[in-house]
Length: 267
Image (cartoon, rainbow, N blue to C red; front, side, top):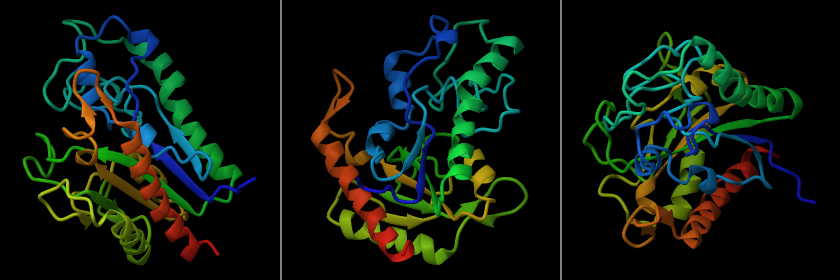
């Protein structure tokens, strides 16, 4: 049996489900939930036979595991439970928002359990790298620091910009080597008008980077552009599905880059 690499992969935004407790109270439609998730992130980073994985199947619009647990009051576009999506879509019907008791129960079931799984793997396994994985829109949406600007195919981050000041979550050497590993496998991809590969441009880091990036375990955030598969060649607009062969192809490339990194640093 193949041993897993000592890597914890965290996928906080790949889910598209509505929590049972909030089902029927939503105003946003299926397409809105779909397009404002990290589309196909759960499938793209599903290296479960190779690494340790913690992911969520709940939409980030209803439970955002990359926000601090104290951000539970109604926040217009942000917080753990949101009122409005990034593109301005209303999430709940008028005058409806879960009360404090409902929020506490929802957090215990979905939010805290997500972070407890992370903490258990970190404590039980000899983890040598934490990799937080996201997909990103090809162009920065409104309210983003890079709003309106094209994004790279792959972005690596090793800086936690939350809290007081900026702190590195691992050395530049580690970040540069992983990025160079991805360059080898993605250099022929053409689905961007920007530079293909970048380090800390744009900077997305959220609560997960803040919380686990301060540990002694090296941590990186990997963001892959959805332009690689949400395009006319691979995406079925009528059924909101992506060609599975393309997802498998991209997943294999990402895993190959991770394994190249592992061969150098996990001797």
